[in-house]
Structure formats: C-alpha cells, structure tokens
Length: 267
Image (tube, rainbow, N blue to C red):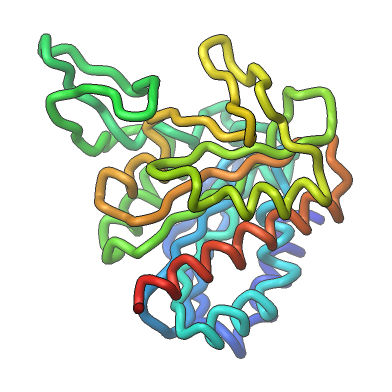
C-alpha cells in the first residue's frame, strides 16, 4: 500500500473519528500530509505508529481496523488520539528513515546526569539522572509530531507500534515502562500468534526478559510520555519476518489491552 492509499483508508473512518492534518512534510519535491485521528471520550489513550517507514504493520493495522478499534474504545468510554504514520516518505519507500535519510524516531529527550553531562538514552529500569528536557531539534517529522504532542493533554496511556527489521525470525516483544505485570496478559495472548522473543539480545546492551520485555529509557515518544506522567506506556515490537496477519493480530491485542487498562483508570 502506498501512502496515498493509506491516507484514503484512514480518511474512510471519518464517521467514527475527527480527522485532521497536523502538519505537512516536504521531501524530494513532494508534499506528504500528516494525519491525526481523535475520538470522543475520557480518559484517553494515545497511539503512535510508523516512525520507521519499513515497519508498516502498525500503520496498516490502524488504517484497516480503526473503525473496530474506535467502537471498542467507545464501548468502554475511552477516547483515542492516534498519529497513524509519522514518517510518510519512509512508508512510501519502505525505508527505515525518511527520503532524506534522516532518523525521525527517538530523540525527544535529553537527560542531565549528576555530573552535568547530557545523554539521549539511559539504560535500566529506573536509571538515575538529575533532570530531563525536551529536545527541540531533529528531522521535520519529529518536530511536527513534537509540536502536536506538546499541545495534547497528557493521556492515561501511550502505545507506540513498531517492528523489528533485524531479528531474522517471526517474533514479538515490547519495551515497557513501570510495572511489566500489567502487560503480561497481553504478551501471553500475543504468543498465540507470534513467539515471544524471550531472553533475546536485541541490541548490544539490551536483552529481553523471560516474557519478552525490555526496560530502556531511549528518548522515544513513549519515554517522553512516561516522564510526563502517563500511567501506562509501551512500545510494541513485532518482527518484519512475521506474517502480516499475525503481526496485525498482535497489534490489535495490545491496542485493545491498552484500551482496557485506560478504562480501569475510571474505577
């Protein structure tokens, strides 16, 4: 699916969501609209997807199933704010980065350490630091979503949909923040569709636990929302070698699961 077709599919959900353009990206002589979908309700879940253009399962899940997702949320009195494809030129080209080779993902935060130095990422579940600040630079895609998110009231939960393009097998795992036991039921349901990448090295310094979870303060949009005080935050990974229908099923498990978690905030 090219980006124009993705936009058309997203706009087909206008009956269940308010669809707006929060920015326009100019890449290689072309203009790309950046869309946002909002549904009524409170408390709210914020979903992002498509930071990496070759990780297409997230945007496709949202485009194909948004009507069903919106109805599920409405039945639980949960509002949705969704940014379905953050890197349109990368999506069109099926490349990790944008058409100019820039990296729209991560780079939302800078952490000041006790010695006064700054880092963009921190390892471990609860790393020590003095303070954090919002990083204002970066590619135009990152600046556009940052401007939009600065105007969004902090939601109860934030879920980011990704895919791993490096692991050479079908699998799923997740970067989580806070109490991972909250997300264990989602992981267990997911492994009916894709194997959990348990105790797997996904980065030179990162290894998943027995449930396929990782704690990593990577300066990403979910890290930023965690610092802003969301109750639930995770970045879900399926692998690009996973069958599209299975990746789709895992995405929907986590989306519905996060809607259920947000609904509990009312109790």
